[in-house]
Image 1 (cartoon, rainbow, N blue to C red):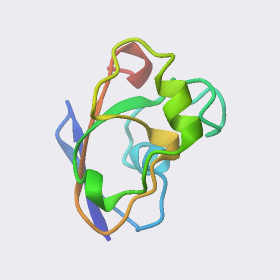
Image 2 (cartoon, rainbow, N blue to C red):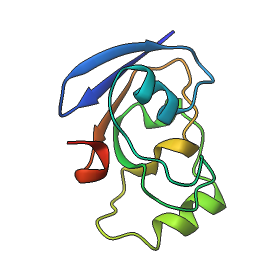
Image 3 (tube, rainbow, N blue to C red):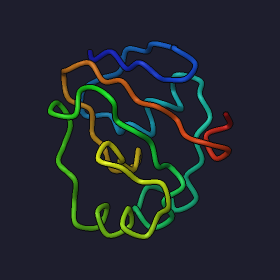
Image 4 (tube, helix red, strand yellow):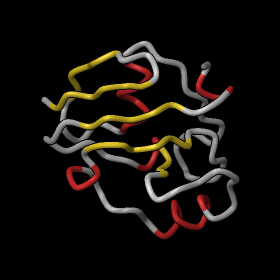
Length: 101
């Protein structure tokens, strides 16, 4: 199991390695919009991956291309639908109105 910490709520959740970050966030009871069904084409599930970046999969070309079209991205930006959890603890920050925040 890997421990997922979700900000700003501070909720922690144990998820199985191999689970998508989007699914783990939803399983934890948080709200996060995904309009494209996990295809990296809408950008609605943009989050900041604050800790544990080395323990998840690398950024793909499709994810990078979509992030390049979004406003407010930074070095910690990822699309939750494209992140696969490993075994290291992860801390993620949900952003804005699309996260239900």
